[in-house]
Image (cartoon, rainbow, N blue to C red):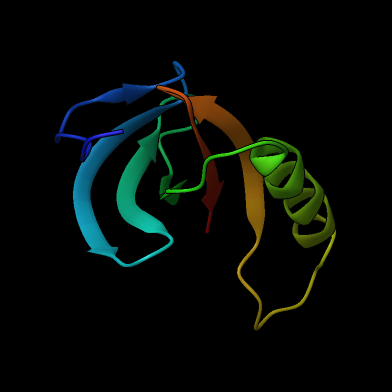
Length: 89
């Protein structure tokens, strides 16, 4: 997946506002949740191969259950343009 441009819609849920940073595992964007107009972070992951999406889903399911004031909350995961992503506070 190439870098997402400002204004790109992701799965009808998020509008990309700006790139925040990138590294070896992926890129993080500031985005707007179009359902409630809140600001979230959307992280796209640069992983491919057999079972990659399954591993991301397993990790997301674990992270999304954690509730602690000092841990970022994960909201939703999906696949956009063939690569997994998830949104978080």
